Amino acid sequence: MDLKLREEVFPHLEGSVPSVEQVEAWFWERLASQTEARILYCSDIEGTAFPGMGEYGEHKWSLQRLADHERSLLRFVHYAIPGVNIPMLYFGMLFAMFCWHVEDNYMYSVSYLHVGAPKTWYGVSPKQAHEFDAVFNGRAFTQAVEIDPQLMLKKASMLPPAMLLQAGVRVCRATQQPGQFIVTLPQAYHAGFSHGFNAAEAVNFMLLDWLPYAYSAAAFYRSIGKQPVLDLEHILVLAAQDNHSPEVFRLLRQVVEAQLAARRRLRRTGLAERMMAEQDRAIALGRGPPCLRCGHICHFAFVQIGFDRCDILKGGNARLRPVTCLEHVDELPAPGPASATRRGGDERVLFTRYSDDDLLALADTECDGPLTATLPPPDTSLPALPPTLERALHEHKRQKVKLRG
Image (cartoon, rainbow, N blue to C red; front, side, top):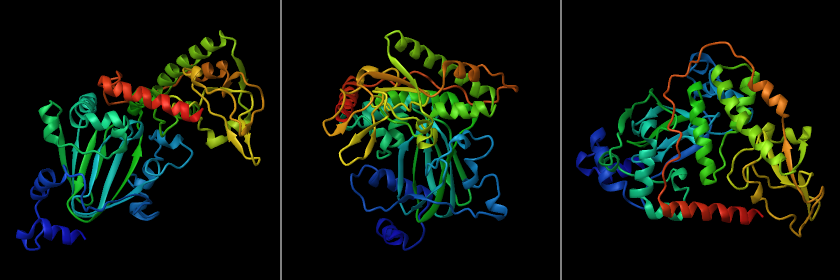
């Protein structure tokens, strides 16, 4: 199919391989603006083409080893997330594209091209991430974003570098050849396409300077009601228990301070409180439940209706009750659907995984060693959204709470 398409698009070459410049020009002039095209891209296939042993399998840049490297904070995620801490394979053909996106939780990513035709990559510096958002939301896809406020997160929209350059957003470009790695920085938008049949592999990793970007990503996700891939609170706890680095403790102190302030605020309202049972702490290998309003992963604490974690449905099946973070307690739905048997009362209850003293003791631990982060800190302000998009997001989150109620 790749060869047939190449012959259709470049008949004058009479079977010769088109140059990088010819493919790039045709892509942006003829294909990228189309709503429908006959292009196959076999993506997100869990697996690796790196051998398990030998020189390549044991190399530090083997993508099946990179996520668990001692310097990668992903090693503190104790469950498999395909494409994040487990590599995924990608098989492309001529013009197979990957649309503009940043990595989940603003992580680093690395892509290795095993074999085949090259890929063209485009990237935008993390320093101009908000400027990219403004072009995407305010100029390129204004109406589409109003209909789907999370359009950018679906990695399904392409816009030409020329539009970004006209808006003052600098775009870098690279041609990746077989045997080469491409590394993307936290919150760096990137996109690209293949020049023919090829096989690539990608995975994420997280260095210390990712931490402030992780915090920024968490705030952005909460503003649009998206559940993050990673449980940042859990990662910070496990890394601190491992005495990982001063950067970990610096962010942990910030997060713990906010958590304890929220607890104090709720306690002043007379809210009932309970420590999580051991079996509840073990659910999802310690990953917290998501807030039904903002999607935040509530590892430290959450609020629900009643003392029992589950409702018993007709037929005897159990269902975990919806929870909120400590900021959205008022969004909890009214008690009990008719199809469920509610136990443990109908009052709001604050569930905590760690006591205040335990959190303070962990956060105040002294960690030797200098700060080693090298990236400049991110712009922690949330991107400015058009008023129509603000209204669309508000309605989207309101409907989500209504459906879960």
